Length: 332
Ligand code: PBG
Image (tube, rainbow, N blue to C red; front, side, top):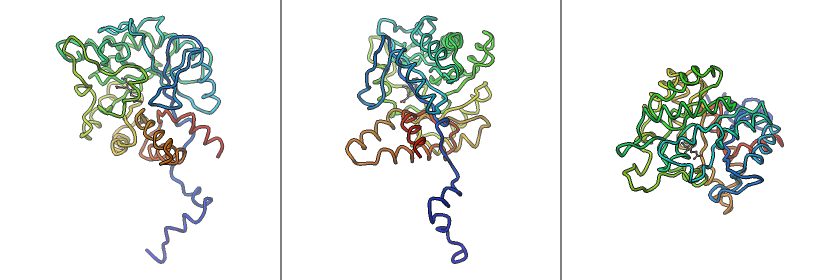
């Protein structure tokens, strides 16, 4: 108690602050989400995500090597699928020569130590922009799971280290684990998007892949609320994370990040596997936009947000800031 105790003694200068710091960041805390497109030597910036590009596989490989040299050890990969390949079954998703499968192969060949985690969900392949197969006006759970198993096995065959189901179908982690094991991929891990909320923060991502739910001639839900979670709920996140661990998930994820750190801590306390957090596209866009206007200090806000996500309980952070933050950490 004051005056015997003075909290400010532990904050007198940077040296003492560094001695008592409870949380630190390093480049291996980050995973970098990457958007891949067809073509060669192709690189186009996403308008709602300055500094983030859709790249062809050749340029993706070069970028992955740079990331590895900066200390980043994992990439999440997403593909922009040509309209002509989209349908309601999502079958392009398990084409052994599909863009995703080629990208995995090339990345692993060029940078074998980089952990490659392809996204497992049908939305980039769906003519309706949904994460599953549409039947009777909704997303059909169990047939979607069967499609996801084929997709995940094709990713494993291409050399993926982990698969990352982001679809929120019930029971998909169990089906993926069984399917991967049956195909001989016992060592391919599952990072499950366990508590994924139906969030407006995903807007820029859907611009990047042109994957938003769309109008159509059949009855289709206009949003993803029948599978992604209601952001009013907390207990439900714990339930979903515990189920996924029981079903065989090696890591669970909470998504989005900053507005959901209460959930991150609750899930962290409830499970005994690493918790990952997705600092999503809209969170990135907000910081970029405010910094462009000179309203916020870009680098300080970036590091503060990443540190706060880690402090809340994240073992890993998937963030579009991964490269910039790794460069900054290297300078320090
Ligand atoms: C697709 C998927 C989404 C994101 C990751 N995987 C979008 C969605 O569910 O609509 C969002 C990532 C981001 O916003 O950065 N299943």
